[in-house]
Length: 196
Image 1 (cartoon, rainbow, N blue to C red):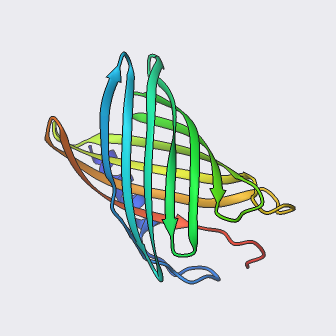
Image 2: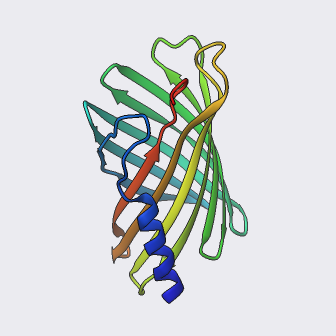
Image 3: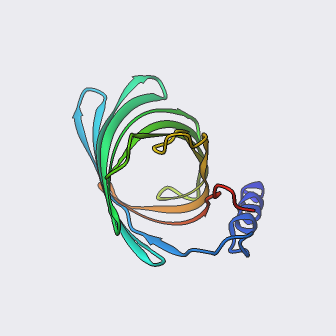
């Protein structure tokens, strides 16, 4: 437990608000409403609605998908999201593979981002790792990180690049067998092309 608390304290220092390097800071508030429904066998249907307040703009994401267990600790799935934002919209199909071992979860997701008016689809690879640390029978803390990498730009001639680095800490509390409540602090670094 002492090692866990030290690891959480170190992570809190890493993701705490810091001055941005050569870019402006941006504060966002995201809400996630998620539901899962058994579809039979080892498959689960997923529904997510996420309104997001961002500095200077609003965004709403709606996603539907399904995952199925294909082996012990391994699920495969996919889905589609619709994203509405100030200057347009995006349709985002995705496929994913999730591997879980003990407290660790590794997820690989490939997204095809279809922006309104874009010449072609953007392909983005998302690699996420997370560890869940139980505090008691109903409460757990998870610490995770994710890199989002554009492997095929929607702008012809633009090189492949890292889109975002994310780090987060989540506290989740099980309130009933059908209902969880959680709060997350997420730090996002978004490199810009030709920026310092």
